[in-house]
Structures are given as C-alpha cells and as structure tokens.
Length: 185
Length: 202
Image (cartoon, each protein chain N blue to C red):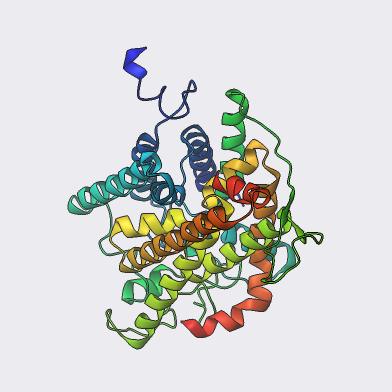
C-alpha cells in the first residue's frame, strides 16, 4: 500500500491537471473530426493534431537522446509479451495470463516475428473494428470518454449514466464477456 | 491582456478559455514527460488512458477486496491508477471555479418509428440515460479489447504504434459514419425528433 503511494499521487495529480485543462478547453478527441465533418469547424481538430504532433516530436527527441525505450508501444511483438505484461493476481505473481483479454496477442510468452503473423493480422482487424465501434458510439454520445468525464463533472446527468455503464462494464466484462473476446487474439 | 489573447477569446469567449491546440501541447508534453521522467511503464504509451486505467483501478480493488485474479497492467502493481476519479475532480473544480456547473437532467427520446407506423399513435420513448448507460458499457468493453480509449489510441498512434494508427483510422471511419447518420436523421426527421440529435451534438 505505502510503496504505491508516490506513483499513485503522481497519477492523481496528472489526472487533476488534465481534467482541469480539458474542462477549460472543451477538448474532445472525437468531436474534432465530428465538428469538422458537420460544420467545418477546425478548432478541436487543431487540438487533436497539436496533441499528435507534440507527442510525435517529443518521443522522437527523447528516443534519440536515450530517455525513452525504442519501439515500446507495439502489441504482439517480443517487447510486448513482457511489456503489456498484464498479470493475473494482485500479489504480482508473474504468471503472465496465457488466456484472456488484456494480455496482448503474444502474451503466452512465445516469440513471434513481428509483422503479419496470423495473430497480428487478426489483432489489426480487431483494433480497427474496436476503434470503429468506439468512434460511432462516441459520436452518438456526443464526445469521447474524456469529454464524458468532463460533462459528468459539470453536472450532465446523461454523462453520469454513461460513466456508470463505463465502470460497471469492467467486472461484467471479465466475468462474462472475456471468454468470447479472448478468441479474437 | 493582449498577451493572453490565446487563452481568452476563442469560440467560447469566456474568461479562462484554453484553446484546444494549447491543450494538445500541454497534455502531450505531460504524457510523454510522465513516461520518460517518472518511469511510468510498462506498458508504453500508458500515461493516460481512461479505459485501461479504470480497468486497472477496478480490477485492483476487486482483487484486493474479493481475492479475485482479474488482470491488470504491469505498472498497476506499483500504483493505483486514479486517473478517472482525478479527471472528474479536476473538471469539477474547473467548472466550479469558472461558474460553469450546470445540472442538466436526462430526458426521454423518441424511438425510431418503424416504416408504416401510424404517425398519429403515441410515440415510443426510451429514457436517454439508459442509452447512455449502454453506450458507456459498450465503449468500455470495446476499449478493453483494443487497449485504449480515444485518447490512448491517439497517443499510441503518435508514438508510431501501427495498431494505434489503425485504431485511430477505425475511429475516424466510425465518426464519419456517425455524423452521416446524425445528419440523415436531422435532415429527414420531423421537428419533434430533432432534439435528440441536437443534444447529442454537445
């Protein structure tokens, strides 16, 4: 408990700052493109692209000076089998979940070649489909997940129900739905 | 005040308005710095994700309380990922400080009438909160499967992760289709049905 405190506090402070800034700027990662399509408003889309550009420039710079590890975020490669490292059990037993969603496509510890193995192809399709579902549902709900948090904090009852569904989905997913989705990996 | 014109002004024309492109720079720097200087990995590109962090938080709590063995990311062994409650509190603080807290009640929306439905009959209505509940549920489920909320998909894409780029492409396609449907409904629906479209907008 105690040893988790510093990083927990850092995460909480980051969340507070981002929540504050998001409320002030009305930033939404879905509404940028939506507004552009609907009314040709580029304000939020600029936010999206400045976000992408900032991260791209900073990661490239920090990689080159050795402050970040290269090639880290991919899913399914050798890096990932140890990296995404979703582990079962609160005690940190290093039994890397060989079954189950949240473990990454190659989490069974096998070393796979990175590109275009069948599992990776499937995960590309899954990612595309998942992104599609999130995009269309977020458009109907009126904002991305972060925007729904901000709206709920401002007193929007609908967004509050959105968040209720959001939180309650986690245990339901791992109790009942995981076995269906685990085949996708 | 001219020096701060980029914070004021803008579409909202309210004091303290932060332009979204500045949010992009600030948040992007924070997320990258968080990982690079605080060692917040593995997994990478994990500084901010409302889906994954919420999953880790809920699973950590359930694991601790009920002795379950739900999966969490590696970094969640070193911290409780309070991102979601923290964002709520931060946004509530900002709204309170700037007087933008406004309770907005939920309502009911008219269901789509089937073709041939008698227009003079009573319209079928659904509570909008139930639709939002289901939407949140579905977004979380899809997010757990693909490891990310829209924010983290964007972060991953900006990191150069091929899956992140594919996910963002899928998301944009979904948004494109969603706006097409919204526009079609707004164009063809009778006036009484427009409210749901308008309110979905923002």
